[in-house]
Image 1 (cartoon, one colour):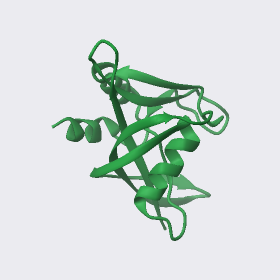
Image 2 (cartoon, helix red, strand yellow):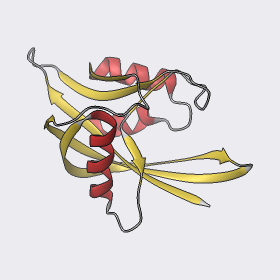
Image 3 (cartoon, one colour):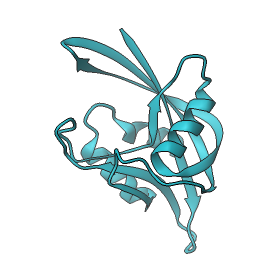
Image 4 (tube, helix red, strand yellow):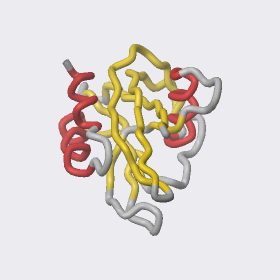
Length: 141
């Protein structure tokens, strides 16, 4: 069984001229035992393009509307569900924020713009399944 997700690396320049990236935080809960930071992403629906998935998932998870740019790359991982190993591919795209048009979902307890160095450190310290730090490093090159 396989699973496809798509997500965005959303960046902006703050008022001090620093580049920032948008990350999500999720506290441990019954169905999620990790204290983790990650990029916005989600499951691709049937007949949905990668870009449509990125638009929908970023808006649902963060409340931000974005423009979707070039594909940065993919990460492969796996997880267990109902005793079955599921292979997952997540495709990441460079995105620019257009504006906040809604409220974040309730899966996450924080949606934060962080300086690139801080975001990379948080991703490196807390990725339970996918090493999103690697995809951000590829984006920065």
